[in-house]
Amino acid sequence: MKPIIGVTMAMSVEERQYFINSDNPKAIIKTGGVPILLPYDQGEMGIVQIAGLLDGLVLTGGDDIDPILFGEEPHRKLGPVVPARDHFEIKLTKQMLRLNKPILALCRGAQILNIAAGGDMYQDMYDQIDRQLLQHSQKASRTYSTHYVDVVHDTLLHEITQQDVIRVNSDHHQANRKVANGFQVCGIASDGIIEAIESKQHRFVLGVQWHPENMAVVDDDMSLKVYEAFINACQ
Image (cartoon, rainbow, N blue to C red):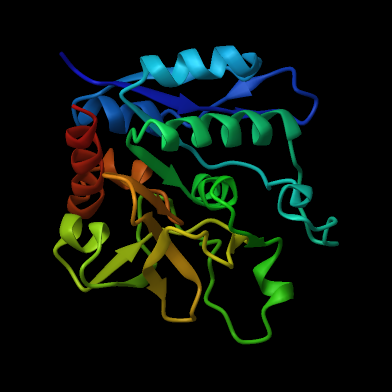
């Protein structure tokens, strides 16, 4: 049996429409999983039931995250937020962590993962970090990798990629700042931005700041390895 993978979706600010980049389910299907798209309005018991049914969870990219969730008020460059999405994803993430079920968190998802576990983030890294940063919102197609990430040795990410340096795509203005207890940084850009985190307490919980789903569908080797490792952990 193929593993059932829950996939979170984006939602319009008015909370009337769900939407998702089709590369998200395609990457899961390509690497042997069965994707299930998850609507938000489930309630506490619904979230518990969903987590019980899933073999793994993918937290996808999307709009910004409400800073109230990590004790801050909105920065002037904060983008659109959808509180219903934030609250659903955080509750579901916490439940999946309790059950020790695999999580692959992408871009915004890596930030949700960190916040759910007790970390925080930059609301706008270009305004909140006083040093020269790379272009993290690339002008090239998302199927093209534009900057390098140093992979930390003796981590899950290094075990998966078998590389000290990887190239990734990039489309974000927010980033993880303080990493939650029980987690560690496993990838970092040349400008010091945290590019990947992982749990030290769970068998497979990985958050990456880039979008491997867009590169996996065009057969990028490193991105396929990430998805294949995740799907294998969900078996």
